[in-house]
Amino acid sequence: MGAYILRRVLQTIPLLLGISLITFFVVNATGSPIANLAIDPRVRPEDIANLERSLGLDKPVHERYFIWLSNVVRGDLGNSLVNRLPVLDRIMAVLPNTLKLNIAALTLALLISIPVGVAAAVRRNSVFDRLANLLAVAGWAVPTVWLGLMLILLFSVKFREWGFPYLPVGGQSDLRSGGGFWDQVEHMILPTVALAIPSMAGWIVYIRTSMLEVIQQDYMRTAKAKGLTERGVNMRHGFRNALLPLITLVGLEIPAIFGGSLVIENVFAWNGMGRLTIDAVNERDYTVVMGTTIFFSVLVVVGNLVADILYSIADPRIRRD
Image (cartoon, rainbow, N blue to C red; front, top):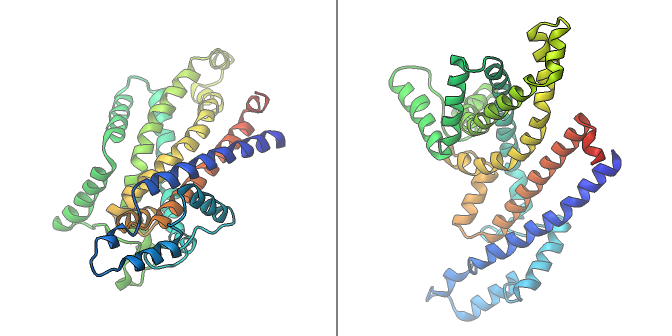
């Protein structure tokens, strides 16, 4: 087991190096972050040259990459070009909000998709099965931005017009009410649902298909022939084996969830890493863009690594491959 984990950890190193290389050169290919100053007649050329020298922009791009990479390895993501604050400090200030939102969305998606997918497989071709498949396909096809806006329109705007209890749509809490626990929960409901629905939809279809495949196995028929009830066979044998691949699927879905938070955090004005990244792109704050991209990448790689380790624990055959 230790050798397997070590091998998987070592495999992440070239992956992260590749991500850092692509991130740095793509961001730098968009142009100089101080290009706007060059067309400002109030800024002297010598001031621009001094600024480029202070930011290290006068060096060749490959040299700047290795300087930046060496700093990243030491935990230094540089300073923001806008307010000169350390990028790592800005990330750590909003990271808890992003993790809270993504963990809530992941938990909600699992709590709903697992029982619905299993029930749809056990009741194959029933009304419930057809309805679950229809809703899953719809949830997978709906754009995240449109979904977030429709949730705001229905559960906030329309519910308020109709006199129903409505949900807040912006920020993490209402400062006028003191921002208590339940107030924070209310602010999380809509962004969590919007972020969870696409993952939930895909997992329902996957779990249903996996469960149907397990149900048709010989050992399932043997268990029923021994006198076990159908419910007992499905839960004791089918359910466990059908969910094994879900561990890997959840790990592979982590990038999509974090990617979705880039959109959802801006739709719901959620102060997280997604909103920080979009704001940095609009402000041409390249150091923050590269810092958040690398941070997202590390989170995704670690999530996939944990998924691989958990799957190897659940299925020892993986470790022998």
